[in-house]
Image (cartoon, rainbow, N blue to C red; front, side, top):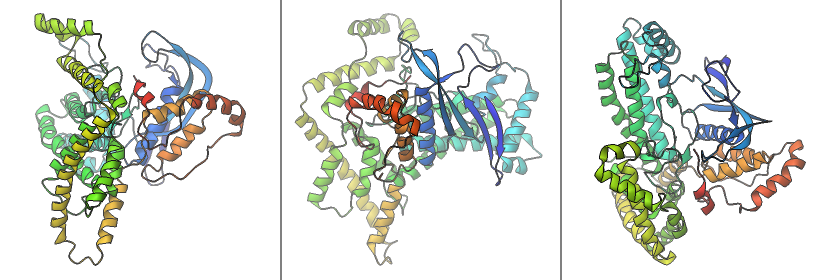
Length: 525
């Protein structure tokens, strides 16, 4: 529900809207209400992303009430009543790729079509508005040629989208529902639903519990965003011929993504002077080692700034101990690889895949079955594995990985030597390297268990933990000093006892800790 538009003194433009305020003329079958649980998550994550330096919509306020609605949280037939909540969202615009799909012609199979099919006059009006308002430099440069203007616009949207998803990949952010309606026309992260940040590094991680096919898995985000751009290209025809937009997409997207991703990863690794060809391989080897050992994505990158290229053997061993402390335990791996299908169901699906591939394609996917078979295999191996065995195995992986990494840094240092010959103090160079790493590797992210603790306290009337987490996420790269809980006076009495009960069963971990074991059971849909 739009409240209006604000123009700032420097010409900046902000649209203000309420999310979860109830029915509008455009509501579908639901009630238009948002609940406290999802509102706290959106409020905190949109602010977290902003302070990580990632383009995003913002959250101005989060207001809750005593009104309740019925929600089936896990879609398992066990609904419960939850408090209604409204988030005030702020962005330069909330127009999405999907906004242009209102012109979609009838589908050849279903007959479904957009509500404004054949209304090219509206498409032209929308393009004029979007380009003139949010891409004025493109409007000015191509004011006398609409096709060239629209091509330049699509190229810029393509580049912004590629850079955005590269930023996501570099902080381990998973969006969860990357359909065309959740893609911003100005390159913002928009619509925070079943999102999540990587804990244990797993390129196939799926944060959305209802994404059974893994369409929006972490590793697939770049590919899906490119697919969405293809759909936007289709929606712009005839104002931008498809042969032009498809060529732009193929020429620009992958190159821009790889360029931005590697630039960001170099900063995360402290490679600040030279751009070497082998840097890409270095990143891949580090991530592979992280994957093999179940390493915590955020914490391992944060640790790397304390690794010295001058380390001797004993220092290297000490660093290795720190790295392995951030790897998954036997218990964590057992939960991660716990089989999810009933054995009889799996057996039936395997038989169906062989006897009736067409029917199997309608109710299952080969990728899902392979993933389940991998879980079974890994689970079986883990039953025989002791904690000491795992520690020994992880050290072997990290020794091999660090050898590659150290070799890369040694080459990097040798190549730097000519550039820093005139530097009087090598410590200055190293200080700069650490500074760059510490401003690109966050210490704090909005992990699911942190959000859940804040939500449970808020549901019991105590919003101090939401405020604490918000304060923490406003400075994600800095070590947090001790800060007290921020409370409204009216919350003190009623909320304190309830919040204490909610937190009693869970030991309070530092906000930078790997998730506790109970967090692996959290499911966000």
